[in-house]
Image 1 (cartoon, one colour):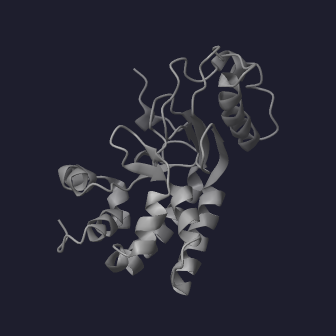
Image 2: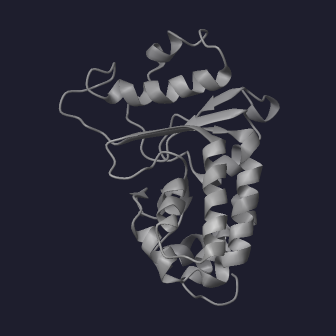
Length: 232
């Protein structure tokens, strides 16, 4: 049987719903050079492999191939696309992570949580969060880039603006392709867990704390969002 642990491909396509999240990517980021997936639902027909195989060996660079794949996925479900179905107008999101940039992004998120967790209940964080499109059945995931982009529009301290700008630059460096269709906001990078329901947080934090991503301290930032007191 194929064992991904013993093989590091150049490219990994996650052809399943809700896989392109900060948490999942941190778990598997060392397993491939580039990872393509969606932070939202994947349509039933999945990626358009017949389309992809027509140019699979015809690319100047691997990054160019990754960009083509993300664009082709979106295009295949739009009117005129190879997988378009009359009367169906899905929301589509797809991105490609360059995994050698992930550690820098995680490091800056760690700096962010260390500096701002004690202020996580501030209104400007809540307002930015509430402006974001929500993903998954619990509506507790939002797009990483959209959140920090919305945060930049708030009346925030200068030092937070500097940190936020750095994070946005690192997101752009890490996600070499960002494609989306039929959304009202600028999504399409990776989702991150940011529940607004405290019960959702308390129900799932024990499991979340076991993830590698929790090393960034993001769960502590969320905890302070609800003003829970000592770390769980």
